[in-house]
Length: 343
Image (cartoon, rainbow, N blue to C red; front, side, top):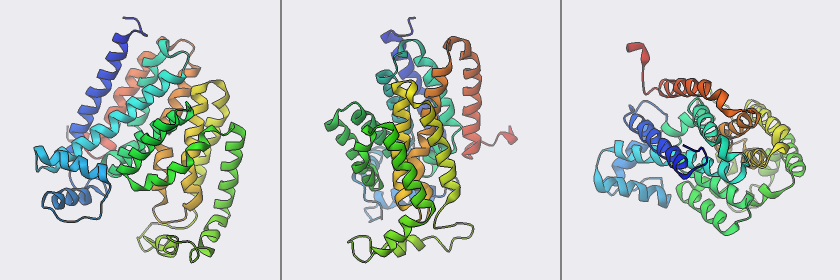
């Protein structure tokens, strides 16, 4: 079969569907002790079924719960739908980005999909999205599509996709005004991110927010959110240098390769822009959740680079296949869904 043929494209999409179905089936049956938010989402579904109010109010997330409730009162169906949509849409939109931006797509698209899915499965951030940050995991694929469409200057569709992300998780509202940043010149974008990183590291942004907390409506609760979770044993608030240094490592790595192709250029831009919310308010508690989108995009950037450096993609298909199988095993073990010690 011709690699660039519609039949091969259909085969790849079918593979992503089957894989997402299998992963979702495994994830949906997890114990409530797996994932710090699993029990909370079980309670949400229970309260939803009985018509009780719950603190979650995102309309599309509620609509998804309503769809699950039509068929079953079992929360496992609800979890299955969340996992299936979040995983398949992330795989699919990444596939579409490669199709749209990579000139060599007819030759190496299968290689890209293999690398991307394998790297996603060994990513602790992907696993965390499947068992813990469920609303964010649903929102991120649409945010990714919004960035891609804006990068292609299809502004109306980009805003629609970004709005869908917000309807799954209101936190993504802060990403909407960041869409135009995707079109900045690479050097200017890097400079802006580095300046923000320096301000964050020096505590300047935290000081500015604290100073103006009583002047701007909605910011007056800054002190409450800044201290929220501070009493949790082993968790730190304030400036997180560990998160910052880890994130900057990939920022400079992606920038280094960004001039080599449109795809690598886009990978750098989407990662850089996704760091911005953390650099602005990353001193609040649980600030790693502000980085979830950026960290979830790391496998995309790495996959783009790996495909680029492979002069003859067919020579590395066997190692990719082995790595892919190990990634599936690692994902199920890391997320606590399977315990291979009892097998």
